Length: 342
Image (cartoon, rainbow, N blue to C red; front, side, top):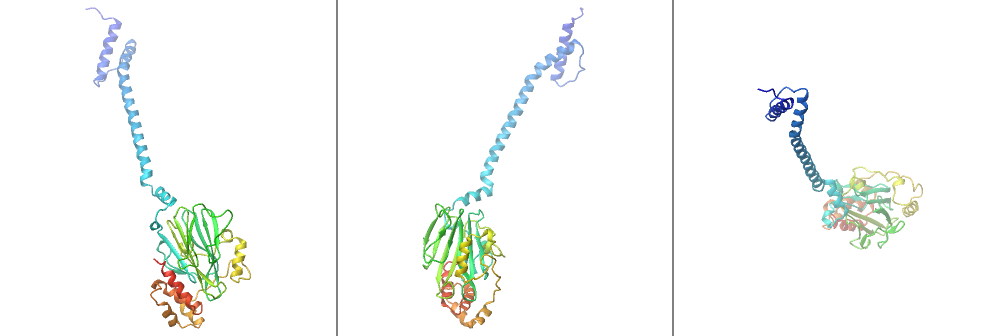
């Protein structure tokens, strides 16, 4: 038999190697010319397979990335509570959404307060922080002073809504004095402070509502009480409405201007240190307040124990009645406030 040529030998060996690789066998790697021929044949056979595998891998990765991206984009809208809360805070559509409520009345007494906090009394003098929204677009401060009787009351309010500040100094009409360019666009006001229902201010997005009522008493330096109530969608843990312990507002953080501070101090007969912190007042209990002003405690209880005064407000009513020296306007004020008590 004739000896096969070198080319024929390469083809035979190459075919055997290719066959072995396709069936998963192992062979010794040829050398010399056979190596080039063998690798050439094998490469052309394997190349389409590698391309197909690589294409499937890329396609699978892209599909997986697309599905993950799609799922991720949906999850941001569907399950992120911060995004939903921000959406809700942009605009409110019903008063039932204003779940955080606080009111201050009389000498003054605070009930209810935000986040189901217990009632409290605050008899201090000076600018007190009252309420603020979590987004900072709404803030309320009040100036408390000794109004000519044995306890303090609100002499004026300052409110900031969407960066615009206004003050109220106890006028009979809804006379808000705006700083600068006037109220923010979309603000609404209804009613009159001296009417039985007071007047209400609604923020442009309707997520905050402030109610103010003036009660004329005909005595003391001011001759009136100021009561307030504030409802909002999301209240911050700030001020008397949202904190357990508060102090007077720092001068740099007051909403009242220096000229307005001087005006209030004149109204309240504060002769010196108007811009400074006012001295701390030590609250007296109800019995001592009645005794100090020569009012029988039982008489005060009887005056306030009427159906028109909510039972949760009767202690404050007795305190105010004694603090004012037996003025029935204190009882009438408690009855009026009871209409707004939830």
